[in-house]
Amino acid sequence: MSDATAAIIVAAGRGTRLRPLTDNCPKCLLRLTHETILERMLKCLISYEVQPIVVAVGYMADKVQKCVSALKNTNEANLKIAFNKDYHQTEATYSIHLAMKQIEGQKSVLIVDGDLVIDNWLVDKVLRTKGSSALVDLSRAPTDEDAKVKLSEGRIVDVGKHIKKNEAGGVWVGMARLTGAFMHYFIEQVSREDLWKDWWSEPLRCVMRREPLQIVETEGRFWTEVDTLQDLIVARNHCEKEEQGLGNGTLS
Image (cartoon, rainbow, N blue to C red; front, side, top):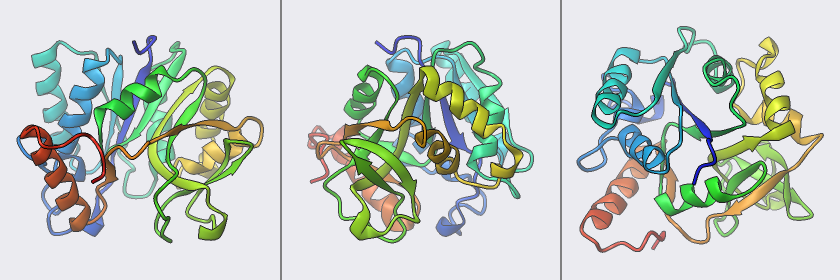
């Protein structure tokens, strides 16, 4: 189903906007219901036979490693750790650079933000899409804080918070599957030391000057990146409904 796709989960950050919840707990280990944000994503990827899965860690790395080890032992999954010891002075691009070293030889990679809570159906949809693609919400009104996408002829040609709201074609969700030439060029870009203090939109933008990304639409399905307490509440409410069989995977 995943066509031997590897995955990188970017989970090295400190989650300062969620303090004091993240003073003693990395953001990816905040609990939703019976499981954490990271556990939910890992179980989803394992169920779709994505392997290997590399979790890029930094802040409170020992706690994240413990979580990953427990799941690895329980599910006999191919889970790995990439440790960004410089997480306090670098950004996601450097974490991805380190993680890429552990998936050499893979033909495709799914890159996921570590604070993403999403309907599993969307993960499956991205994995089934041929070619390099990214998940985009075309119906959500973007805010200044959102990473936005610019579209041309139905493809993504730019991504980032710098895009003006009136020029945005949609909201970036935080998940992209890269393959072929796009993946090759992306690996070259994340190796650039001058980009290591940037979010991973910067190496993506460099590659998109050569080759745009396909859009995978969210189609009204649930997703949120947990940046604030309100985001966490929304994610927890969705997961509670899901467990009770009350949710249908949508945003409503």
